[in-house]
Structure formats: structure tokens, C-alpha cells
Length: 515
Image 1 (cartoon, rainbow, N blue to C red):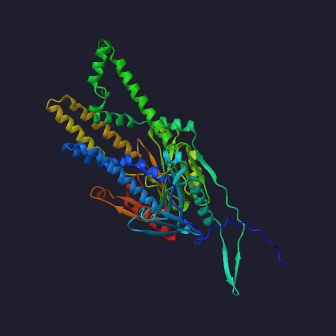
Image 2 (cartoon, rainbow, N blue to C red):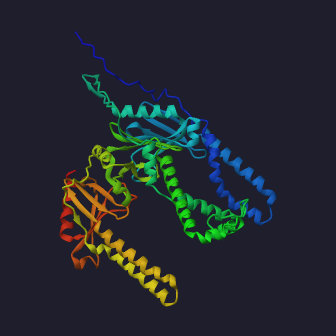
Image 3 (cartoon, one colour):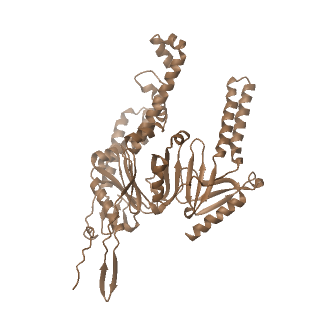
């Protein structure tokens, strides 16, 4: 008697031969219209040329011709673009004059990312990106579907994930095909970290920025002649004229400290508001979940991004804080990975703002740990402060030279030089490192301290460098080559004893060879 075994098998995908070709969502044309705004800036020189030559009558026809040509090009691109989702592959055909046929097997797709801008969210569409494992070497081997229905994007991602997660064993025996499959329930996604509105507001306060003020100032300077009023908030004479008009000039001269405090409070308000707004727009609805193969990050208010960081492709972790943040216990965690981050970031920000107690579980998911309290650290030689001290000396001498020529403002030179020198000496004390079990930790930075956690197995090369300053002191600098790169400077341990550097290099390269 043969026992019947029920096997849970996911819904069978469409066979490639029977799968229908699909086009992008028609709303792609609406997105093309929106994108004409930024692209039309490239047409401004031509319009200016028409104006300078006195051919004003041709400006409107030229604009209409540009818009018509752009819309026809967008329509032809949409018409000639089609894709097919088969049993185990995605096929994309594109090109108007030159056709390109591309086949992407599911097994080569590292992840399917979903991104929605503000207009795309209103239209219910999304951009789907296929990362094929070439993120570290460039984006030429990745592909994307510019705009498909959000439901279709989520179904496509689920299909590819199911294909990669369900093991199927097949073997041919005695001329017959014997297949066996085991019911292995996929683990549910676990939430590792999330940020609500209260956390976003606190993070925004620590993200003080005057970028908005700079943008407004630049815009007022650029379009000063086009504004309907003759007032520039960054011009002190305009404020004096305004005060005189309302007979407040005498009061302000008598109470200068009130005006100074008011100006300082205004700057603080603008800076804090800008930081809060930036944090909310970038990290609204932030969620970091653990999937069977990757960490998935979802965030964004106007532009909603959904990207994954394959755990196996994580090369290093970087814990960042600030001199004020650190006193309140707040930190940021980034992961350096071979996987790209939409071309916008070279490092994945997986925890924007949290205490170390919330960061440690995320590090554990990628097999990295922070040094313990009992870990012994070694410091770099104080010679690394030499560059800052030379700069401080230059600022001091320059200021004193200006004073010698009768410039009273030259006294700022010694003051600035003193600050630069003090910063260099204090910063040199913050350069330290430690070698743990299979991992190197590097700490550096005074105003923005960061700790790099670098597994030995991730290091592809170790360069030992010395120069005419380090060589007489018996010192050397170790520079680590790690795949994926980092936007937070290179990974290096500067100015340590040469014998120590050589021993550390040997240990790391040996561990790499074993891995």
C-alpha cells in the first residue's frame, strides 16, 4: 500500500511559452510629462540664445516643438518596451531603433526592489529594480521596470522570492523521473527595528541643519530682480530700512542685544525645523525586517523605497554618532555591502537613530559584534596630528602677518589656529583600534565619531604604507581593501608600530585564505 503525502507547493508560475507579454503601466506616460520639468532646464540655453538674437517670436514654437518631441519619444519608448515573466526568468525587450532582448534568470536576481515617488503613489504604480549581483561593479548589469501596478510589483517580488526559497530535488532513476519535495515552512519576516513619529521628531532635533536657509538665500540672490518686492532677508541694509520705516531704528540701536537674541533664535528655529522635516521626509514609516536571506528596509514619505540587503553580501558595519548625540546615547548604523542602494548611497543606512541596545540585535543578524567593555584598545601614534598642527601654524602666521600690515581682523588667525591645533590633538586621541576574534574594530573622529567593524573574511587586501615621517619612527599605516567601497572614507589604521602592523596583516590575510 502506498501512503499519500500532501506536499505544500506554491502556485505554479506561468510557463514561459504560454506567458503573455506585458507592457509598462500607461501611467508611465504621465511620469514622462512630469520629468519634462527638470529636463526642460537643458533647453534654457537655446531659449536664451533666441532672446539675445532678438528672435523672441520663435521661443513659443521652439518650446512647443521640444514638448512634442519629448512626448513622442516617451510614447515610442513605452510602445516598444515589453516584458515577460516566465517560469524561472524575466525577459525584457526594449529599444526603438536598436532592439535589446534580455533574459534574467530568477536564480541570478539577488533582490527585487520597489520604489514609489509621490506621483507614483498617487497613481498606484511603482518602479521595480532587479539587482543581479553586479552592484559592486556597476549598474550596467541591473535592470528595472520603470512603472507597473503596485500589486503586480509585489506579486512579482513574491514569485521570485518563492522560487529562491523553495528547494526542489529531482533525480532520474531507471529511466523514470523521480521527484521529491519536502514541506519546509518559510520563516516569517521578523521586525528588527522601526521608527515612529516621536522617534523621528527627536532624531530631527539632533539633525540640525541650515541647508533650507542656504537654499532660500541662494534663490533670493538669483531671482532678486524677478521678485515682486525689493527685500532680501540676507541683506542687513534692508532690515535697517525696514526698521526705519516703522520708526524702530532708535529702539534697535538701544537694544541691540534683543535683536541679536532674536536673530539667533530665528536661526535655531530654522535649523531645527529643517532637520525635523528632512528626517520625516526621508524616514517616514521606517521598518527593518529580517527575511530568510536578507534585511529589508522600507522608508520614505514622498518617495517610498523598499530595498533589501542580502546578509551574505554585507562586508562591514559602521556605527556613527556625534559629539552631542553620544552624550544622549544615540547612534546610527550603516552596513557596507556589495549590494547597491539604488545608486544613491554606497552604504546602507539600516538604523538611522537608536540606542546601542537596539543596534546590537541588527549587528547579530549579519554576524558582527561590537567590542565589549573589557576589550583592550590600542591607539595610533600622536604623529597623526602633525597635519592639523601645520595648518594651525599657517593660520596663526597668516593672521599675525595681516596684523603687521594694520589689519585688525588678522587677530582671528591665531584664534582659528589655536582651535585647529586643539582639534588636531584631541582628534589624534580618538584614533584607536582593536583586533577581536575574527574582526577588527577601528574608532576615529572627534565631532562625528564612528566605529568601523570589519570582519577578517571581508578584507580582500591589506596595504602597509609608510613615508619619510613614519619610517624613522618605526611606524606604518594599514589600509584595508574591502569590496563595495564606502562613502565614509577608507578603512585604515594610521601610524602604528610596523611590527604590530605586519602581524595584524598576516592574521587577517590568513583568516581570509581560510575563508
